[in-house]
Length: 65
Image (cartoon, rainbow, N blue to C red; front, top):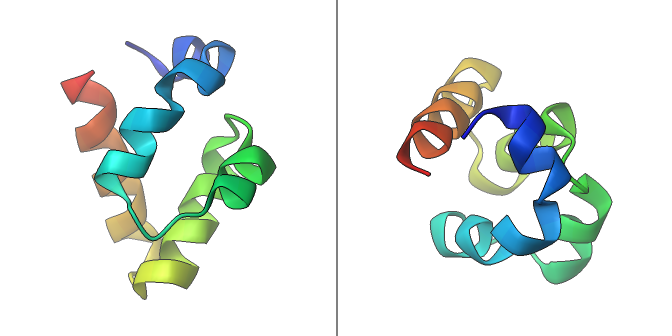
């Protein structure tokens, strides 16, 4: 699944996002609303990782879908 598909189906993939990154709240998932850059920022904030690491985690997760 590519990011355009994920963005379009954000409500459906929200459960998978919560499973992968459990520190994200439902409100934060609503704020992200499929926006990859916002997700990167939230992962940096919640998990204390660098932008590159957050992007790598997202890419790995995206490939797993």
